[in-house]
Amino acid sequence: MNNAISYPDVTQLAVPFFLSAILLELGWIVWRGRGGRYETRDALTSLVLGAGSVVSGMLLGFIAWGFFMWLWSLTPLDLGASALVIAVCFVLDDLRYYWVHRFGHRIRWVWAAHVNHHSSQHYNLTTALRQTWTGAFTWMMIVRAPLVLLGFHPAIVLFVGGLNLVYQFWFHTEAITRLPRWFEAVMNTPSHHRVHHGRNARYLDANYAGVFIIWDKMFGTFVPEQEHEKPDYGLVHNLGTFNPLRVAFHEWIGLFRDVFQPGLTLRQRFGYAFAPPGYSHDASRDTSAEIKAKHLARNPTDAGTPGFD
Amino acid sequence: MPLNILLILVVGGIAILALLLHLLGKSRLVILTPEDARTAWHRHFPDDEILGLTVASDGHAAVVQTDQGPGLLWSFGADTVARHLRDFDLLEKPGHLSVIFRDFTAPRVTLYLNATERPLLQKMMVPA
Image 1 (cartoon, each protein chain N blue to C red):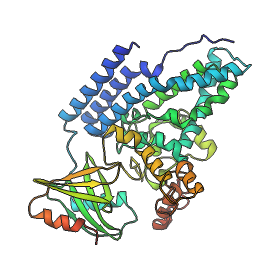
Image 2: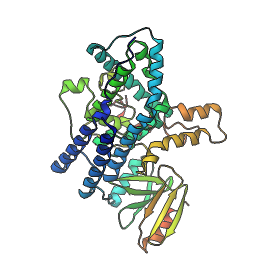
Image 3: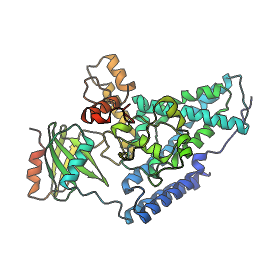
Image 4: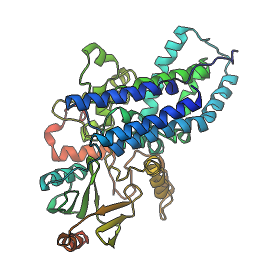
């Protein structure tokens, strides 16, 4: 069994591209007076969170690597490292990304790590870099286990995961409106992902795809961007701080405060940790399903339209 | 990529971009009109009924009276943030008023109010 495969860390190699593209997008917005918005402290927070995420990956990456290498020692399968194997792994890993991302919005324990990516009220290329510091604590690496057990080497699995993340950078922009129909039909694009970042009731829990939008279409979570309803970016309850530490850890702190408050049953404590975000034992908060229902009560004509069907 | 090059790129890139944005005027706080404040409140709390609303003279904050009690809306960079005024302390300082929320996600808001509006808004902020 081959243990000596190694691939470059593409997310680190892409840093010069990330910075150049941000400057290009900013230049475009300033020159054309449209195509997005930038705010100094918001962008700074996103960039610091991006840098922190790289550091977190360096410090905690050994957990996932150790887990995958342990699985690799168990499996009798080895698919090798041909271009075809890497391509197949890329597609299957994108399916893995779809589900991890969906869990990230539907399970509070995972949302606690992912929420900072949605915490900006802006949507520009710096938002793409607003990445988690605490992903390792969600143990979502388990979802990658089947790939390793099927015979994809851990180095290939992590390599294609890096490519997936780099692909996702460019579509965090309002500078690109729509792309050719064939591309929009198959690939994740700025338009599809703007929907994902929308806090509008219509757009909640939609478009989880990483690279291929087909997963959302297959699993019923696709909502097309509506001409008449621009996505309103950010969280349902927006943060009132630019402090990267508060942004990175606020949901974990909220989660643990909720779980350990006095007077709850075990089931309620479990709900605060693992039910969808917005769960509360006393109905004092709203989940996305409840937000959608309240919206429909105020706007009954929206029933049956995309995002409300 | 060697770590020292990565570090220079990241730190240098962040510093240059922050400076550029500031020089381009992207650090300015949004100025609220009463209509903006009303729209912004409903953006944050769509179920609330707004009973009254007073915008600070600098346009950076508004005290909103709603059917859920009083609330504070404030400029947050180019955007706004809002909270109901339920669990907070007011710290009176010369020249400004600090609202300390017991909320990890919005710990403190500083309001710069003139001598005329300060007692008025302060009174409006206290839940009935």
